[in-house]
Amino acid sequence: MKTTDIVSLGIALFAMFFGAGNVIFPLDLGRILGDQVVFGILGLFLSAVLMPLIGVFAGILYEGDYRSFFARLGKAPGELMTLICMITIGSFGAIPRILTVAHAAISWYYPSIPLWIFTIVAGLIILAATLKENNVVTVIGKFLGPIKIILLSSIIIAGFFTNGVLEHTSYSHLEGFWSGLIEGYSTLDLLGAIFFAKLILVSVKKDGHKNQRKLLIDLCKAGGIGAFLLGVMYIGFMLTSALHGQEVAFIGRKQLIFALGDFLLGRLGIVLGVTIALATLTTAIALIAVFADYVSTDLFRKKISYSTAAVMSVFAACAFANLGFEGVMNFIIPIAFICYPAMIVLSLLNISYKLFGFKPVKIPVFITLIATCLFAWQFNWF
Image (cartoon, rainbow, N blue to C red; front, side, top):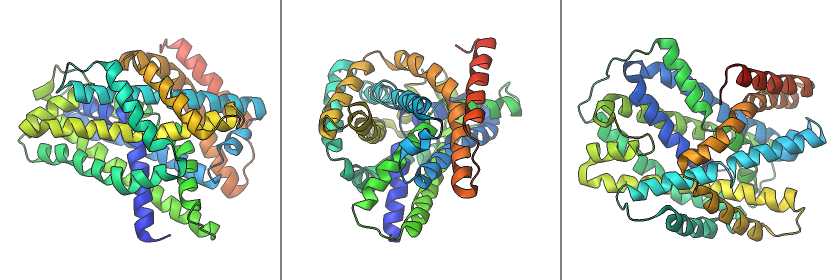
């Protein structure tokens, strides 16, 4: 692969990851932590940068075959775990959450647009971009991704050139770190990473790459670029919010970035609204492509086409989005928090299996899952 192709894939990965939660959580975290923001950044890096990178690496080692990835748990448990992951990142979880944030971006400046009308328009745009699966990564990496990076950077640059102060908070270093860890956990990016690997491989294989070893190395480089861009954007967002949090202290977290945009960019703040809508819809495009492939191949055993599955997936996502941001979050957070630790363990064990032949997998994953359920019940997480 050419260097430009590797960079393009890295940008595509960043653009696919950086969706609704990746915008909201770091900004809210920076505002809350104030002068403890550095420790929050460290926690966020572990759960929202390192974990997705591990997921991409694991998916690449399995050559994008998530069925083999989960099959090591056994046929029924593997299919069930795949289904849970798909529900969480697909048309009943992350995608509706994305649509609600994209609507918030537009309604901040045009409050008369109702959610249901916006979801129809957004759904049509997403559908147009995902009808041909093997073109999704190219569109994101070469066109939508660079635009997304440039526009998102505008608020960070404006924030650094506008006088601000890190307010003292009551958070300790450990509390700041833990808060960052938990918020990064809520992005669900590890789940998406495993499935994005297939989308990336579908894109590069159409170009006829024959040297598999070099291809895997190049894809890992692209994953590193994507993770680096995620990290840079997180640092910028958290520091900007921490420096100017007092200016938007009473704004809800879903509207926080738009209030910051108005404060930092003035009349140009509307550009930020368009940016966030673009940023979130780019991630939705990638997730719909992954979810539609799963619906067509796994649920319907190829009895319906990918295009038909894409239409069904977009329709379901648009309908579910009308529950609103908090309604969607109330649905997916319990599922994600219980399954995520098991997914981390499974990813690490599968990497160890591919690289070192380490075979144990079922018992560690199931123990982790049971322990998480007991922990959640004991401390009344939900």
